[in-house]
Length: 327
Image 1 (cartoon, rainbow, N blue to C red):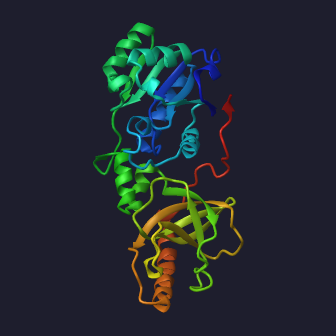
Image 2: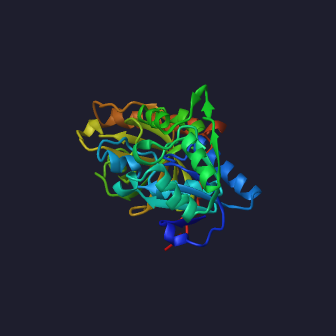
Image 3: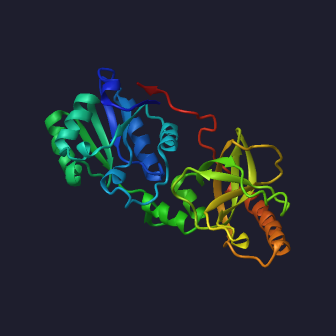
């Protein structure tokens, strides 16, 4: 997949395209179906398959700080989109100037003149243009004017509920990470650099932990979780604590991962943590012995959870570094 950040980067390169467009936060099952359908249609009509998305997320520009935490940051979103086969991802910078464009101005500038769109597939609730005025009917009218067809994908449902970024976000924040997997097609994951912590895990407790410098925005509810951890291309079982370590009186949110059957110096490494299932709430213990006993039980529970066939990990592009970009 080629990543272009402006229309000028691919001007004159694409003779005709099948386009899908959206924010794709989380790249969940609904998004995956949309992208796969666009790729299938492009192949059938000998067109270039293109995903159009935005950075930053439009809500971040329009609402500033009054936005929810997003499920995927830009690099991970690109990684996930690339997994589903589009030839090009046009990652447009969303600005207030863009927000002021009418639906027709946006379509004419970016889709018709820029991408030579011949076919377009949108989600059931997609809107575009100033004031979100552009909808399926608007796009059909513009398609008739500029010579492209438009299809709308019905909502994807799992357990009788629509798969949506909001639903996933609510489940993660409530700690229901096991329930998120069917909606994403993978476990919810965060990435962080291993940094020096308070040096209590190994020395005081006998359970060395990797303390993560947080880069993601969305985190599960504080507590202890069974996890998979990716380190230098290898995958390890583990348990992780999200919270403020109340036994030691901390007041800063942290993610500390104990990797089972692992030894090595990973300070400075970037690791990826996949949250499988919540084990318990975070709590304050009366002393070190009580805390150590509880951690030992957490480790045993983590092993049992991760041994279940349903807990098998699905990696997304373990060799992914960065999509090639057109500059």
